[in-house]
Every structure is written in C-alpha cells, then in structure tokens.
Length: 584
Image (cartoon, rainbow, N blue to C red; front, side, top):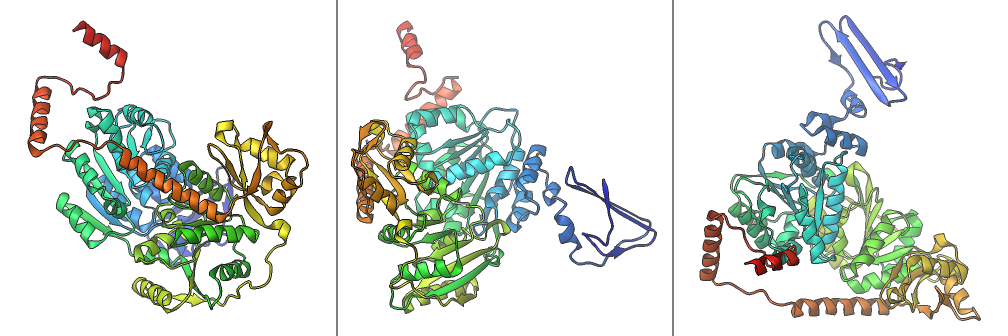
C-alpha cells in the first residue's frame, strides 16, 4: 500500500476539527482506501469532491442488486447510474408497473435488466420473465446484454426469434430459461405448433422493449394474449425512446396503477454536437466525400431514406477507397449479422443504413452519425442520432441539406428538441480523385456458393493466391447458395482477369465479374417478393367464433378440474405416444 497525500492527485479540499485524513492506494488491486476520523464536523470546500470520488467508488452499490450482478457491473465498468436507471431500479424492486420514455443511449436495458435478474429465483429452473422486442436483431442484442449483467453460470437466458427451425425455438422454451427474450410473432408461431402450457406458470415479469414500435407493428394484441395467460399480479413495464399520447392511452386502458417515467431528450443531446452541411447544386455524394476528407472521420453510421440511395452511396464510397457496406431490411439475415459484426469490429468504416438500423443497435464509441437525407418523422430522427453519444460518450451529428424543404423540416425538429446546430462549410470533391485507382474498391461476384461447399476461408485463399491481394484488404464476404459476393480492391479484379489459367476455388472452376449496385437492388427486390409469397402461401389459421372460444375455454377448465392434461398438437415423443395409443 502506498500513501497519497491530500494535496497530490485527488486534493478533495476539506477541513475539520481534530481531523485525521488518510488515503491509501493499492496498485495491485487498483483500489483506494479512504479513511477519515473527525471528532466534531467535516466541511467540504471543493464542490467537485463528489464527482472526484465517484471515479473510485461504484455508485451502483447503493441498489439492492444481487452480489453477482454487482460484480458484473464492476467488470463492465459501470460507475454511475444514468437518470433513467436512478429512477427505474428502485421502482422495479417495488414491483411497480411502468411506462418509461427515455432517449436512446440512456441505458434502458440495464435499467430493467439489473433489477430483473436480482429479483429472479435462480435456484428454480423455470421461466420467470418475458422480454418482448419487435425485431430479431434487438432480441439478440438484449439477450447478450442480460448475460453480461451476471458473473455466474446460474442465470439462463433463452431467445425465441425467426431464422431458426420451430423445433429449435420450442426446445429453447422447454428448457425453462429464467428469462425468455422473444419476438411476439415468432413466439405465437411456436406455441401454436407446440402446446406447452407450463411456460406461463411462473411468469412474474413482462417487459415490452421498444414499446412504440411494437404497437406500430400491431403486436399489442399479442401482448394482450400473453397477459391473459400469466398471473394478474405479474409486473408489466413498457420501455421506449418515444411513446405517443395515443400509445400511452392504450397502455393505461389495459394496465391499472401504472407509473410513468420520462427522461427529457436533453439528457442525451447535451453529449452531441450538431452540424449542417449545405449541398449547393452538386451531388450529395460529392459533398459527403468532402465532409469525410475535411473532418477526417474514420467511422460513421450514414442514414438514407430510400433503399436506392443506400445501394448507390455504398458503391460510390467503395469506388473512392472507403470500406463501406449497405445495411437494410430486405437483406438476408446471415448477411446483416455478418455486416454488423464486421462494423463493430472495425473491419468496415462506413455503414450505409436504412431506419431499420436506427432502433436498438448499440455500437461502442461510434463517433458520428451522418444523415445523408433528413428523415420524414421526428421519431426516426431521434432514433438515428441516438446511435452516437451513448453511455456518456461524446458524438457528432452531420445533416446534409438540399433545398428549403429539408432545412425547414430539420429546423422544426431542432426547435422542438431545443438543439443548436453549427453550419459547416464543406467543399464537394468535384473533378478530382480522392484516391488512386489501385485503392478503389468494388463488389466481386464469384460463380460458386454453398451448393458447391464453398466457404469464406476458401474465397479468402482464392483472392490472396490468384488475386494477389492481402487478406487484410478483403472486406465482407457473403456466401449464397449458388454464388458469393466479396468486397475487394479494384486491382484484385484486374489481377484475376489477367490470369491465363482457368480460375479455380477449391479445385472447381469459377467465373468472376464486378457486382453492380443495380444487381444488388434487383436481388433485394426479389428477396422481398419471395418473402411476401411465403407469407401468402402460409396456411391460414382457423378463426374461431365467440361460441367456439367459450366452449374451448369451458372444456379446458373441466379438464384441469379433473386433473387431466392439455393434449399437445404435436407431441414431443411420437413413438411413446403411439405405444400408449396401441395399449389403449
């Protein structure tokens, strides 16, 4: 232990009568021992003393959190609770029903996740909490966050989302995780195919995250159906960045004694600086490249209103040497997940996204958001700018404006939010190159895919050996059934086309060519049409009359009184059931 005098690094600045003051620092344990002995009084002179000491004292310790949760909080580096966490955690422990409206980046997941885990009976292996979210991406992110809030192995978190077989989702439910994170539509599909009444037995908490989006997508009916199945005393909490007056009214009509917590947007906006860039008669793309060159930004999330802009802009940036990718709703799921993972790992510098990405994505230390076009609604604008300046970090927002209509729209948003923005003079990159030709990037189409058992590693080897490029210069690779797409430097394609021998991947001949933005758009459109056809082709569920519903409910009650069990539509063990049937 080493002694720190008050006048050295901390200098709290106080005095007292008959006062003994000592600070000890352990370099090995990285801890401060703070000892004060005072007979009569202690006067704090330095107004920053509390802030200074909060860097060394974890203020989450004041909450009645589980010991393993406190350990996780310490490990995650959480020091001070945000405003929403300060208000929500005590009320959550009291079992209050809540409506929480707080801007993105204020720590809403931790606000309900930390007290929720602390209230669970971890010795009992049964599902005790439901968390409902509107999209698969959000569900995955929340499930991962919840796991990180506990240091032991006792906590079990299950997830029910699309993109996996129904059987796999059912097994996730049947395993009885303490917390089940689910997309309502997928949960409905699973439970309509596999009857498992035990899931409702121990549910004490129902949390609806991104509540406004859930209601917008029509999931409120699903929430009503779930509430009919669980106990009346279950705690219900709605969380969202924005909750309209109509949405709040509908929630209040359904849930009695509900408390509302609202955190003003200023809590997050004060960490952001806003800049406007006037686009004067030139292409937005040229002004964007001028902005990137002038500010030296190395990473940003760029939002567009239209999908066509996303395709064109990502190709334009790649042609100017930037590692850029598109991110939109009609992409295949594995492709979206792969792109987001690479963006978070800094393998992609600029992500060109639709408003799908504005909700719930938590990207650590994202320095900036760029609105290539201004959104048509304030809610979308709030969700976009909430991707940066999160968890107390600083962030920047750049808005490209063309014409008085966009200026008036943005001015209205900023006036409502009481935001001050600074004009930024940017020169467009006209008639000059930002990079040399050998640094420009393109998308490469390779005529082999999963059907030929081609993996990403095979394509990397092919591009390195035949294309003469370095592995670190290869961007995102997505392998489809019959082909693959790779983000590469333009010179790699030139090298491949110059090869005299037939090009081969894993011993199989392939053809390569540039994959254009038009093809990407056509692919996305075809995928969207295919998904619509699947929905139309799906067998319609029979609609029961009120009389049939009443008869079904009556039969269910009679069976439960007789000690009978509800028959499943699809049994877990067909062989066993068939034997029982024969025996009868």
